[in-house]
Image 1 (cartoon, rainbow over the protein chains, first blue to last red):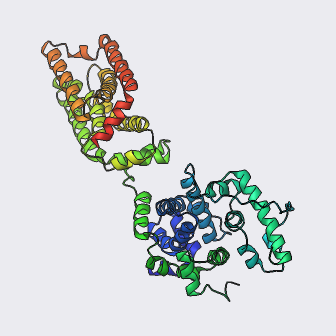
Image 2 (tube, rainbow over the protein chains, first blue to last red; image 1 turned 120 degrees about the horizontal axis):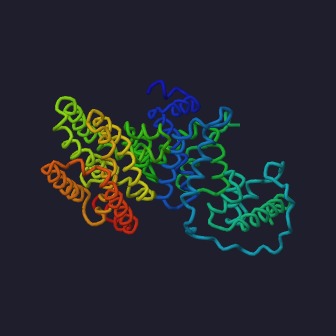
Image 3 (cartoon, chains in turn green, yellow; image 1 turned 45 degrees about the horizontal axis):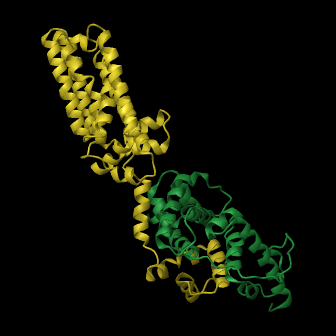
Amino acid sequence: MGTLADLDDRAVLAKVADGDSVALRELYTRHAPWLGVRLRRRCADTEIVEEALQDAFVAVWKGANRFRDDGDVAAWMWGIAIRRLISRLRGKPALDVVPLQEHDDVEVAAEEVVLASIEYGDLGGALARLPPEFLAVIEATVLDGLTTKEAAQLLGIPEGTVKTRAMRARAQLRANLAGGIS
Amino acid sequence: MTDTWHVPAETLSAWVSGRITPTTAASVEQHLTTCAGCRSRVAAPAADQMLLDFDRIWTGIADRVQPPSMKPLGRLMNRLGMSESDAILLGAASAFTVSWVAATATVVALTFLMSILAPASALPIYLLLAPLVPMAGVAAAYGEEVDPAYELSIAAPYPQLRLLLLRAIAVAVVSVPLTVLAGVGLRPWWVAVAWLAPGLAFVLLLLAATTWWSPSRAAGAIALLWTVASVATYQLDQILVLVGPGSIGFSVFLGVVGAATLLLRRDVLLLRLRIFR
């Protein structure tokens, strides 16, 4: 146990892949808190979050040997956890769906705009001024790295709505950055 | 970037509690993905704010990664090609098999011994016991007393009838070869396999009867009837008739009746098995 704590995540994961449940416990101690809190921020239902977290670590236990050596363990585990949450949520209606506000004045954005390409301007401020339902879509697709379909399941809205909101969010972000306050 | 800047304690605490702007939250989350140091600092505020019960979650994980499953039977079936999840459920159910296999093995060994030492008296005992062995095993597999996996089998989104038949097959895999082996010394030679027809019929009848009674009661009734039949034919010196060519048709008929009843009343059976648990 003393030596286990000195190992990095990949070495611990390798032990988990060999069926070492003490190593799984170590991985849980390291990652369950931040994964749990982060999942909790995506879903208000504590019970579902706890189930998803359980599912995630069971999936890690079974799939530890599928981890690619060049990847990052934390990012890999988050990918598993958020998808476990989505499958727990699947079929359940969203707890509170924020109605989409009308944004008729927004022009259609070019497809290739991504956050990373924006080199100047107050990105944080621009993000903060996005309507919450747009921010949620950006968060799910860009930051959490989900596909349109997964984001739709997480947020409890149709895929088409995710696409529309992502498009409008990008357009508004660009407008915010270019013109300060929109 | 991750070496120079870390999430301040109050920001981390705000992120945990949710009192934080979405933009800052996104920034915190991106940093956490790459910084083990900051990740380890989440545990304390998360525990303070009692957001999630991490101990209980771990208990759930531990139960699921170390189910009461790693039993020989589950491993055997897994090696024979059964899927891992099926094998785990079987394995969980096979706690019963330790005592039951021991009992079966004892009966089988005794019969085998007798078939060598006293072939004349071995035959009726073998014919009496052999067809009951698989049925008793199946009954034990569903008995209301011993099943450490019963909560698992209720909670699992798993077709109960499938589980039930899987367990019956597992029982057969263990008991049938043993019992056949025990009979190889008997005369006539076909006795060692002839009991399979009533044996299979009894398993099906047991499952069918379980739609009315508890497994142990159903097994008791079948065993009683078979004992009566065995003793009666033995008294008449006609015990081979029970498994002879003439009664195979009857065994098949019983089996078909059992299977049909099981199929028709499977909903009742599943419901009853839940109640028994």
